[in-house]
Amino acid sequence: MRPVTEDELPAFVNAVEAAFGYVPPDEEADLWRRGTDPSRTLAVFDAGEIVGTAGAWAMEMTLPGLVSVPVAGVTAVGVQPTHRRQGLLTRMMERQLDDCLSWNEPIAILTASEAVIYGRFGYGWATSLVAAEVSTDHGAFAVPVDVGGRMRRIDKEAAGKIAPPLYERARRRTSGDATMVPIFWEFMTLDLEHRRDGASALFFAVHESAAGEPDGFVSYRYKEKWQNGNPASTVIVTELFGDSPGVEAALFRYLLDLDLVAQVKFHNRPVGDHLQRRLANPRRYSVTGVGDHVWVRLVDVAAALPLRRYTTDGSVVLQVHDRFRPANEGTYLLEGGPDGAICARISGSGSGASGASASGAPASAGAGSGAPDVELPVDSLGAAFLGGVSFTSLAEAGRAVERKPGGLRRADAMFLTDTPPYCRTGF
Image (cartoon, rainbow, N blue to C red; front, side, top):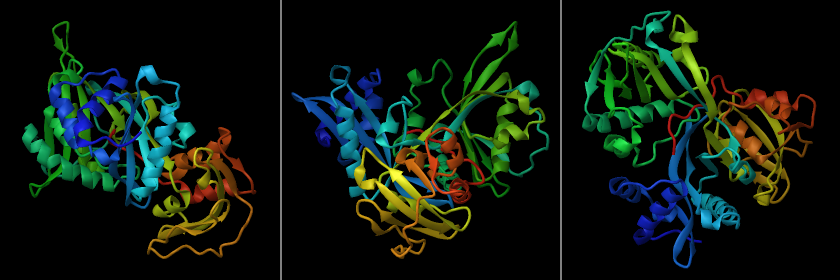
């Protein structure tokens, strides 16, 4: 098991795709090869053949308090069917978490192909996404949107230039959001036909402010349909983001007003989507699915907890179990608030000061050694880390235990955010 070399990247990409039952065309495989950093890959070789793969994008994630920090975006994880049930995945996950620390990335994130796989490696389900359909016949807004400016159609070359900075601004304003992987925008404009699922090529539009500056972006496909001679097409939205909720509402209005369209379909919107509440008849925003999206792994608990900001000033003692990385086991005192946090391990392997304040000052080791408020496994802590999952709900699900009266309430007051975390991208 080792990282691949530049020369081995073609075989690595083919092995990754084969594990997912897919054979990429040459232009797509070439794009993945050009966008992959070999030093952040892992491959298991058997007689010269790659039989297991894993990778990690160098990404940033926006944490509560709108702090952007480096994270490892785990991807390309697969084992060939000839080598399953031999411990290869476990070996790769162990090595990859060690690599994360060597890259100074104490947080790893992923989107799971199967929800049952990654909990045993310490990843917790932290954000959700909503799939929805909206009937254009019932697309009236309760309150008209007036943000000024105008909508403008653009071609894919312009989209490849305009969308990335708009996305980056949007994700920095959204807790739980992450940077796009390096090749995403090129992949978007490549727009391979076999990825369209029978729909059209992508269309692109931007919203421009009154000053003529782009402040919102949408990409979408048409799936043509006629019913009894009447137009009944579906618009499938692939990206929608803007500099403000008002601009996003203007993009939504544009989609609802497209000619020949009976419904607008989204595959990734946040829980509690403000677009639903824009509608005069919000029931016509039909939720067709709610699923897990980003899973979070705290590779180094003491280093990760001070990176985010906390909703209220307070302190909580957490007893964390981590069977997959015993070095993480211990009891941690977290003290924090909206301006920063410090964390000290007060018992367990390597107990002592750790973490940092918002100013970068080391945490105090003299915080005490009180009994834990909450006891939980590291995957549950990862689930709660972004502020969208309460410790109380984890306890109700049997995934956390209150050890001191009021402990769950104190933890929730610090960790929970005003709006659920949301990630627009997959990786």
